[in-house]
Image (cartoon, helix red, strand yellow):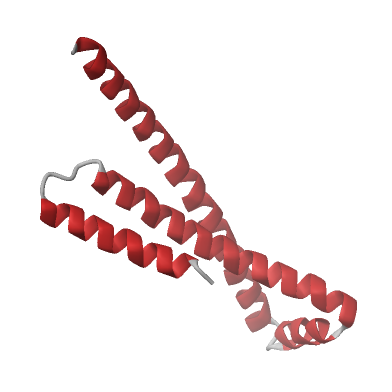
Length: 120
């Protein structure tokens, strides 16, 4: 029995470490992507909309458009992925503390909803 309790405690500690490290990394990725988008919006405001017009014109160009759309898509994907990852960590933590059927049903519902959001 002592071996199992030691193993359970080690697994719990490892899970907490991964959760806290992953949560911090995901939060940083999302915050950075939001900051870049916010900065772009402020530059657009400061130039009276000229920067936004130039950005849209760049999207119309065959070569520059691929780059511009890649940047925009990457920022949006980073924000969405960060948010979904943070939700997944929260669901996992809740799942580790389930004590009733009602709690399990709630966690299952949230996990299923998150899975549906992730599918294209």
